[in-house]
Amino acid sequence: MDIFAKGIRLVNRMQKILERSLRKFAGPLYRLLQRHSGQRLIKRYANPEDRFSQIYETNHWDEIESVSGPGSTLEETEPLRQKLRELLSEIEASSLLDLPCGDFHWMQHVDLAGINYIGGDLVSKLVDFNQEKHAREGVDFRKIDLVNDTLPLVDIILCRDCLVHLSFADVQSAFVNITRSNAKWLLTTDFPDVTRNYDIVTGQWRPINLMLPPFNLPAPTQIIAENCLEIEFKDKNLSLWSVEELKS
Ligand SMILES: C[S@@+](CC[C@H](N)C(=O)[O-])C[C@H]1O[C@@H](n2cnc3c(N)ncnc32)[C@H](O)[C@@H]1O
Image (cartoon, rainbow, N blue to C red):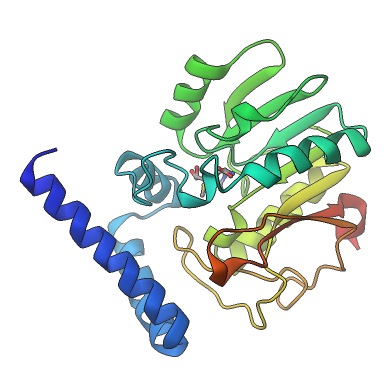
């Protein structure tokens, strides 16, 4: 790595440490700055596909192991990988839509025996990479937009670390889309200790509590505690809802 690239990496790291401290100790200021950077993001990249493609191409989350970021390392997903397999067996799922699948980094280590797996993502290059590297019988990757595309019919939709990147309006559209798909189950990221949800521009990030406004989902049927290694997000769960219940 040349000195220029090293310099950029160092600046990125310092920016992330500063961001984390602001979020923790100066919430209102952090949200104000996030609103400004959201407006800049809209100006620079008109649509979500361009924003997430840019995130992929620049490894924006600065994680060597996975372009899907620090939440997708093997260490971070260790408890999840085992518990997910158990849950799939318990609900007798034979098909799974992993939307978004990101780079399939941790999911490739989940036992998918007996499961027809479809991995979908908004970023074409990521889907092409996965299809070339990981597709096999029963494992397929497609470009799918959670917010706008018709979703394939499956038993369970796993939507990990995605709604946290979407604006309120896009989350609501994603829910409408998921309920239209007639899947039986939705397993998605939720932070039950969050006391108030706030809006962002799609492409940014914040933790969300799906039981609070504007989402108001009922209590989940079951949860998988991720045991997130970042203490600040130790409440991070994958929560399970029957899609039928989301229709009401
Ligand atoms: C933080 S990564 C999470 C990936 C994966 N679920 C995991 O646990 O590793 C977020 C992913 O969401 C994808 N994404 C964002 N908006 C999307 C949308 N509307 N439809 C499908 N994928 C989307 C991005 O391209 C990115 O790959």
